[in-house]
Amino acid sequence: MSANAELLFESPAQVDTPFRRSLRTFLRNRFAVGAVAVVLLFVLMAICAPWIAPHDPNETDLLLRLQPPAWMEGGDWSYLLGCDALGRDLLSRIIYGSRVSIFIGVAVIVLATGVGIAAGLLAGYFRGWTDTIISRVVDILLAFPYLLFAIGLMAMMGPGLQNIILALAYKEWVIPCRLVRGDTLALREVEYIEAARAVGASPWYIMRREILPNILSPVIVVSTIRMAHVIILEASLSFLGIGVQPPTASWGSLVADGRSFIMDAWWVSTFSGFAILALVLAINVASQGLRDAFDPRLQE
Image 1: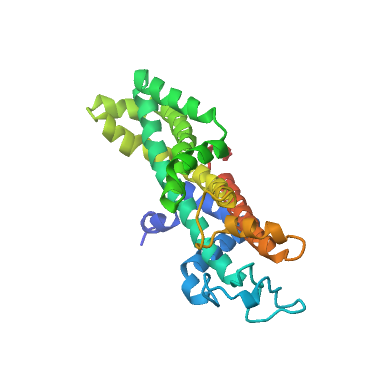
Image 2 (image 1 turned 30 degrees about the vertical axis):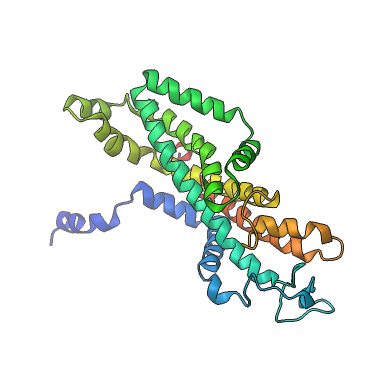
C-alpha cells in the first residue's frame, strides 16, 4: 500500500476536529470534570431515590421528633442525618428533594431554551417589526427582578409543580433569546447564508439547517449556567411557601422547616442547605469548564 493510500485510509479516524480539541481541553480541567461527576451523582441519586432512600420520606413518628444525626448523642444510625420536626427521616427527604430540584431545573431550561431559540431566530433573521416586538417584550421582562416576577406569577397561579415551571420559564426564555438574536444578526450576512438564499433556500430552512447548528454550542453552555440559577429560584419559592407544597420533599421547604429550630436542631436546615450549595456549585464549575472549552469566542 502506498503512502498516500495509507494516509487516505487513516485520515477519517485521525482528523482533529474542533469538537475533539474542545473535548480534550475540557477533560484537562480537573475541577470541571470533578464537578460533572458531582452533578451526575446527584442525578443518579434522584433517579434511584426509591431504592436508596432508607425510609419513606413522608412517614412521620413524633417519638423521633428532631432526633439528632447518628454521630451525636441521642442519634441513631438508622437515621443518619437525624429527623425533622415531624420525625421524618432527613436523609430520605433530601434524596427525594433532589428529584424536585433537578426535574424543575431541567424542565424550565428545556422549555425556556426552546422558546428563546425560536424567538431569537425570528427576531435576528427577519428583523423589522418582528425584531421590534420581540425585543420590546424582552426589555420589559428584563426590567422586573426575576424573583419578584416569579413570586407575582405564583401568587396569581397558585402553588404547584406545573405552576413553578411556568412561572420560572416565563422570564427565563429571554436569556437564550438575546444570545440567539445577536448571533443570528451576525450570521445572516455571512457568505454561506447569502449563497443559500441565492439558490432559493427558504428562511425556515436557512434558520434550521444553516444558522442553528452554528449557534447551538454557546446556547447550551449558557443554558447549563442558568440551570443553577433556576434551582436556587425554585428553592427560594419553596422556602417562602409558594413553591412545592407539603408533604412533597423540597430542599427549599426543608430549609424553611428548620429555621425555627436553627439553634437547637441545626441539622434540619443545614444539610438541606449543603445539598443546594453542592449541586449549584458543581453546575457552575462544570458550566464554566464547558464555556472555556467549547465557546468558539474564547478559542485562540
